[in-house]
Image (cartoon, rainbow, N blue to C red; front, side, top):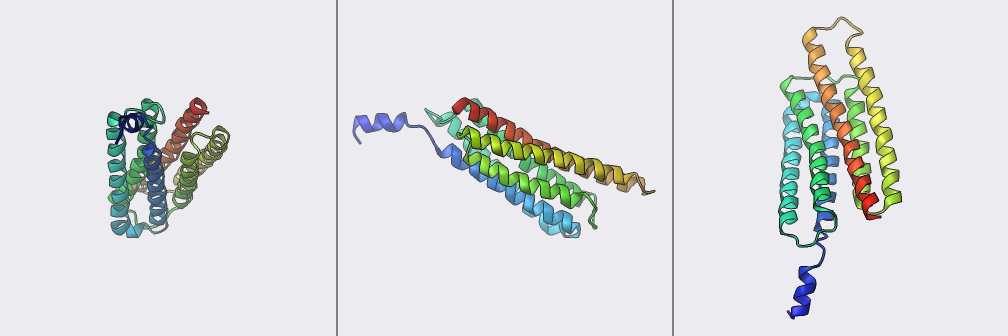
Length: 210
């Protein structure tokens, strides 16, 4: 390799970060789909919860790769702080989905409840927008369109959350069941909110790089 080619290679932007972002977005979609299946049939938590945990563990490994590349790449395609923040936000969504599934298992939930499947479905739809948005991160107009949809989904999640929690107090139910499902719904809402946080970071990146 000539000295000129070495120079070009040294100062070339490391574009693999975008591949890692897409991989994390795919993992969000996988975890969200599994979570929706879990809420459809929580009695299968012994099979589904470990699968979601596997997705979460794989996501952590991708974040570690990203952090390593931040340290070793001479030129990055985005600001290093933005790369770190985006990977953290994407990973947070997976972590929150995993935390929700763990609660279903720990609380020994065996029957579906109104609100659970619907909120998990919002997560599935939001994950699809996140995947598309990651691919359009440097295209401002398209990124803003994805962000608008994710915001609408977050608002839909808020409505579903209010309805689901309100329903807990409509009937005379055992307090322990109310506590279990309130915590599960809280965790679901937090995961949906984190999707909007991902969108906000993506919009900020798009504005900087448009």
